[in-house]
Image (cartoon, rainbow, N blue to C red):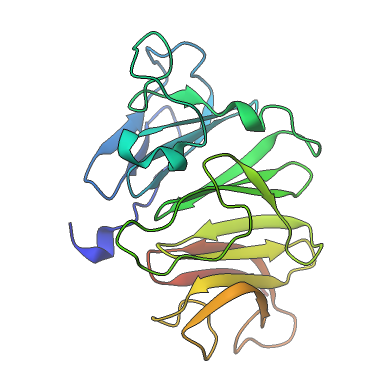
Length: 227
């Protein structure tokens, strides 16, 4: 698969069209209004990472599934038994069901990392290092289970994950970045950032502009700005 397609873009359609996402391995998933998985309904967001997928329901439940060889990206225990929780079938991430600041309201994923935001603006991540040895953000506590991430005591309203970098937006409109910057995806004059660093909210922007959202491709970043 070309590098430009290495991180899939989730497409969410209205009027009962499916949610679509594509992983790095070329697998495409679409979620319709009906499903054969128990409890897997009212899906509001579907995202993909290098070897799998994560889905979020309106009630804040998170499901993951994908390649069993990269189980850390799933954030849950898996079993080869079809009656338990095999990696290739959607399974609930139990560790995000009862969090101190409320339910999960947004997911982001890329490379081998999944991120989740709570209603109370806390950020959680899980995943693993890139198997090919490519740079990965140095996130304290990055494991196979969801763990909270502190970004200088800020509340987070949006997050995006690239192939080896993350971008976060605070409630105050400040943008923080971490990870690989070999393609300038962090907007800083360095090759990499191993701890969260603030960047200009609107690089090159004029007065009266504010960042209202962030997004990321495999090796680039985007700021959604309101004037």
